Amino acid sequence: MDTQDFSRSKALNNIPARKLQLAIDAINGESIELSAKATKLSAINRYAESNIPIEYWYLKMDRDFTGDSRLLTKYTEYTADLKAAYVGGTSVCFAGKHGVGKQLSLETELPTPTGFVKLKDLKEGDQLFDEKGDICNVVKMHPINISPQSYEIEFDDGTKVEACADHLWLTYTRKDRRDKKISTIKSTQEILNTLYVGGKQKITNHSIKCSAPINYHKKDLPIDPYLFGLWIGDGDIHNGTIESADLEIFSRYKHHIIPSSIRNESKSVAVRVDGLYSSLRKLNFLKNKKCRNNFDYLEKYIPDEYLYSSFDQRLSLLQGILDTDGSCAKDGGIEYCTVIPKLAEQVCQLVKSLGIKTKIKINESWLYNKQHKNRYRITFSTKLQVFRLKRKLTNIRLEKNQLTRTEHRFIINIKEILPKPMRCITVDSPSHLFLITRSFIATHNTMVSTCILKRASLKGFSCLYTTASDIVNVLIQGNNDDKYLAKRELAMVDFLAIDELDIRFFNQSELSNELFGRSLEPILRSRLQNKLPILIGTNSPNIKESFASMFKASLDSLMSKIEDFSVMPGKDFRKEKPSMTLARGTIINTLPEIIKGTENE
Image 1 (cartoon, rainbow, N blue to C red):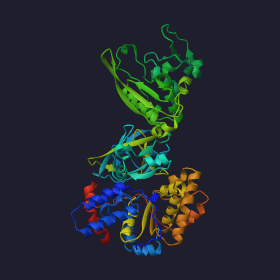
Image 2 (cartoon, rainbow, N blue to C red):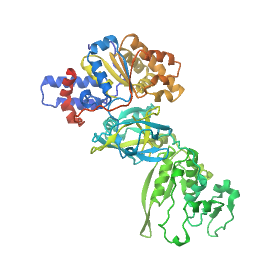
Image 3 (cartoon, rainbow, N blue to C red):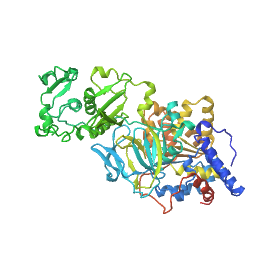
Image 4 (cartoon, helix red, strand yellow):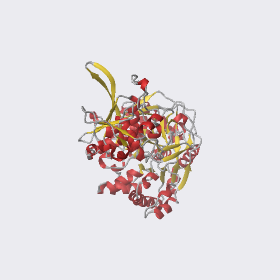
């Protein structure tokens, strides 16, 4: 079975050479019989040649699989006679939730249309947001796993997320960002294995693009959001006036301004807007005369109805705050500063909900050797017009070399933590992505196809694991040699697994739909005509409904020849067996057992 009439494409192989060499060196260093060592080396090299992701090299279906039992049954049936599957060209599309559990800590905060809730308090039917900022619904709450292998993922804006080793993320690698490629799905473990690049320089590798602005519903607000923002920035908490030297900010309220005095020693003006005082008093935002010397009695804050209002309303609120109490440097750097911790957190949340990356920096404040309240500084850059005041608005700029840094959140560290209860949820967003934490980070909800490829590769069949996005990137952006070798390998390899064939790629734009259709159609047609097996993995059960290009009819016809094995979320199938430790030494030492088990399953 080891004969093949094509050359392997390096462009379709993502296995780091250093990782492979480390595994080989570890095996060569073991004190075992030469035959056992040869068996291990053969398996490792076959898996790497097939581009099977490293995290799946050491997993076994009967021991580590925690998904729907029907998938385990299908795996057993398919691998019982791989020769028959190859001769008959048996092709399967595994649709729906599949693979191992994609779990988050029960304490994870999730944004909803009415505020934030913790995962432990979430229920089926509740509403969340997807990466486009649109509302999606929770369609399934999966069983709680009491003690999964747990990790803490830290982002460069200070956000931390606790997730299991198999949780899926939609990330860009440094190479993806440099070559302007699209993001791909990776597990926590895969990200950890490739956390840094650049050798000793330790350059951060993975990033997640900031979500689009959150689409909360429009609210009936008691005070115009821009005016309320002006008061939050430079308003008096006793009489409701707003003090500013920039009368331009009051231009839309000029018919409602009550004449007030101009201080001789200052260029600023204390402006009273008709109706503002009474509205602030009704909302209990103003101090009464008895409390004027009690500075901790009342502090400014932003009510939830403003934080969870529409995009336009939230933008107006931020514009008011920044026009009075924000700054914009000539390089486009924007800063807001306050001594009120709660207000700083709320303004930071407000900025993030508009799709902008930011974080809070805390600095000590000293005057005449006396420490005062800490300063909470919020800094960011954006192309969004977060000012109305012309002298600040003209400074807004975002250079091309700043785009990636400001529009992506980078994963700077992952560390293993003590196991804690986690669970997986399924949402009905087209991409199956949903937002988590107060930083609005997108997360995602593949094992059967890779385990089939492992079995087939050990039987001597040529195999290839790849993703839909990798295929398109190589066939569209690769050089001529890469394109030729990739097309031939995709058409000729004995078993081909195409993962991540999801609706999100076809829904991006008409051009995206056409690119994926143009790239995938000839591969599927050639393999089906020659009866060569295809294993497709998708989180979109109705993938055919997303085909909309000139290739729709052809793709529909080709997909109808592939068995549709849809497994919608259901009861988890779990075996009472200990989870496998993914430490390097343990992995290598368990390899003989895995190989023997694979041959005898």
